[in-house]
Image: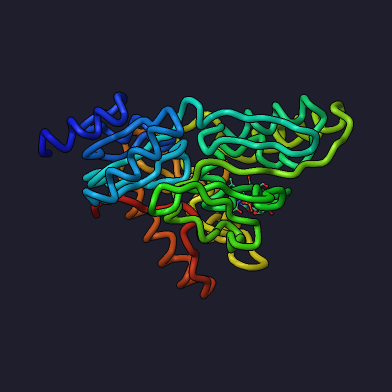
Length: 299
Ligand code: EPU
């Protein structure tokens, strides 16, 4: 690490942490160090960072809640950007909600429900941020974030704010074309409904989730996408993987599409288990399971 680069980054974002272990920032509690972990608290800091990195290009990676990631044991080179502070704000105006990329999805869903606004119930148990949720069009069988997005605000490569209308986002099942975008936030369009009926839907979804998923463990949500018309969890279960271990990583006994870090797992353990699952499911059922989680860093 060159000192002057660290000093420059520190001047833009005082929350800079060099060589920050990413295991502290992922829900799997796995991941080696980021060269530069930058906590961005304001819109102005993000603009300054984008301008700086245009002059001195370094690889960048946005880390939201770290709940859908497998970060390499060697970590991530370059700058890992974590949004917080004013980028976590949310403003409600009638049925329109303007929200920052760092806002926690379950908190947003609850806040809107309390205001009698429906449309985000499906996200009540999705442990991610608005930014990450937009990139991967996060959600459940009951609905996805993309369903209610009207537009997304990004910083372009010249650090100017651009508003992308919904049609420009390329929203599909667990994907969008926002992968490389510097997302500031989004405008959502919700529907007015009885607060009590929204709340009871939320309670039911949380109850179902607690019954079917390994809540309270270190995991990264569904590891694989559901192949069209099939359930990845069912295929992995039928292939006999429930409870199967590789080092400290284990296929959940509760839901076979979850891998749990039960005992000091490394990213390599998780990756090995993933490859075993893919190979066996392909051999038994002729189905290629695609990753839903993102595998990032230096492998
Ligand atoms: N199943 C099994 N064995 C298992 C797990 C599931 O046989 O070990 C069967 C279930 O009995 C059911 C089917 O597989 O018939 C589907 O299971 P489930 O209802 O749990 O839903 P899922 O398709 O596995 C999807 C999302 C989840 C979301 C739930 C509920 C994907 C990849 N996953 O899971 O999203 O919470 O629906 O809406 O689309 C995530 O994406 O990270 C996530 C957790």
